[in-house]
Length: 288
Ligand SMILES: [Zn+2]
Image (tube, rainbow, N blue to C red; front, side, top):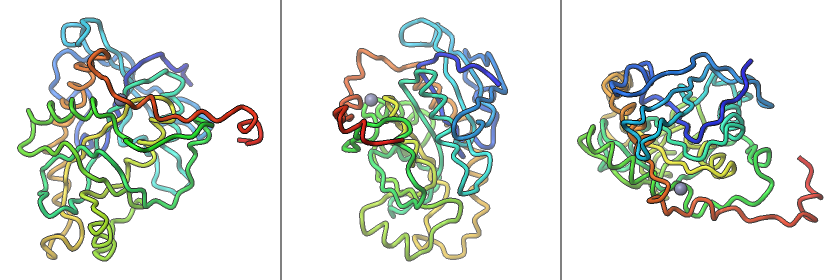
């Protein structure tokens, strides 16, 4: 078991990089893996193996080497409902002092303007999961979700993704449904009715755990298929893996490029203003 290294950046790998070995096969010159197989013991169980990597000073915004932790496939070891992969990796991020988190994944396009191969960078989310939240284990104050994703991080993702993909959308409403099954056509009609653009399984709880640990967060999702009932009822599903294979290196370069480009002085975001401090006399009445 390992001690948690101190780092400011983290990249959560998802289905976008499923088909490759991240960061090694992203084709991003100047990134070095310092340690592999880092498994950390947490109050929520042992993490999957993480990597500690470094982007060369020649590429970073402040011209000093930039280290980050990265975890594959959102930390999933199993899809069992008692598994808490997000809590495991965010516990590590909190110990590490991570302040900037980018994630990637894939999802079904609900909005009829979306096609497979597009990239959506959501500005907001709609939580349809049934799992209990563990946010109180990370922060006992009130965590606001007025603007849950970091506007500056989203702008960097948009810029970097625009170099790799044909169509990139700088905002969108992400519906997080309950994994691991896909949605019914009726559920998709409901989600479309409340304005959701894309559905997936991983933005929750990452997005609110990031805020709870005081980190900026934004994610880019590859549209891997049309959501049920949106298009082509003869679709068999296997084409999602073709999109994953095509996307692995590209989305990897996007997240690495964002970490390299992050500029604390240009950021100007309001992510850190979304914690409402609970007075001690109230906090002391609440047990964990
Ligand atoms: Zn921010």
